Structures are given as C-alpha cells and as structure tokens.
Length: 87
Image (cartoon, rainbow, N blue to C red; front, side, top):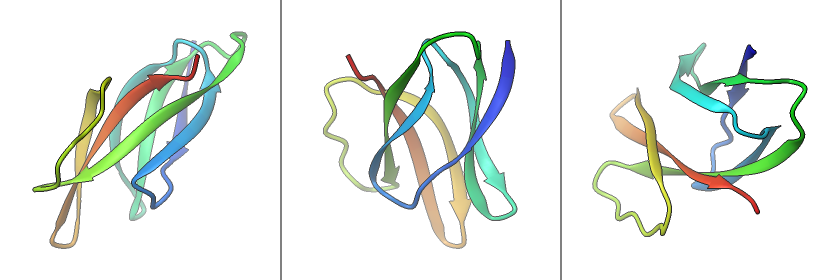
C-alpha cells in the first residue's frame, strides 16, 4: 500500500483515475490547492472515481455520496464527497 495525492480540479463534478478500492483519507489545502490523499494498492487495476465539491449552503443531489472532508479558501467553505467508482 502507498499513499498518493491528487490535486483537485476547480470543478463541481469530476472524476479521478486511481487504483480500484482506494481508501480515501483526507482533503486539505497544500500550497493553496485542494488536495485529496488516498491509500492505494498500485498493483490494482485502475478505475475512474466520481467526486462532487459542494459549497456551504448549496444543495446536494446525489444518489450515492460519502463525505470526505472540508477546506476553506478565503471566505468560501467547500466540502468533498465521493460519488463512487464507475462501474
């Protein structure tokens, strides 16, 4: 197992390519960039995993979602949700 980091795009919905069954650890700012850290098995096959970023006060309309973490940028507060691996 290895811990990898994934800088997050500035988009509401996006997918990241990562090894299957990655264990999502935390999201924090690194040098002002929202970054996700995940424990992965590099020998696993890769998959696309969907994510959603939601601002405080915004509605969430996802059938599957798991809260990953929150970060602040200036006066904005953002929340990252895992919407699951693509089938």
